[in-house]
Length: 142
Image (tube, rainbow, N blue to C red; front, side, top):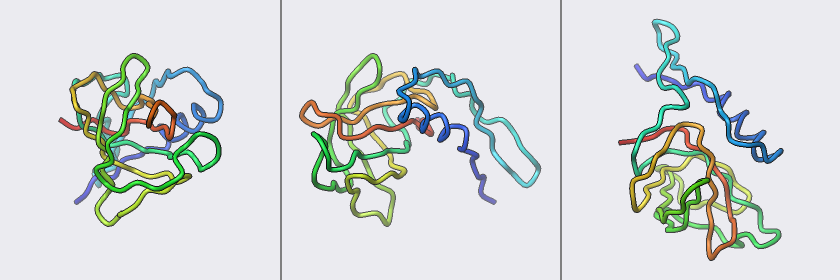
């Protein structure tokens, strides 16, 4: 049996952050729904040193200084967290071939170096110094 994650709290927080430019201050818990009931999995404030994570990414629309063309899996770009910048590859899920400006979706990101990550951490995606997208960490992989 597969476990399903409840991500509504994370996505609500992320939407508020993007729309209102709120400070990053998540204080929620991710829960798993199993046939036996609900159980806590990971606290949002748990910090893990890793270079691989899954995220919900929103690529900015074509207006302004954003990217005008779509990208494909293994797209190399700059990932910017509050306190550091690092190069990373954005990998699309199997079955997805292209990610277009204005789209939102789940991706897997592999950074070139290990950093402190936690569920709920907000980041920007930059290309040539311009912000082309923003996202939130959904799961830290080891």
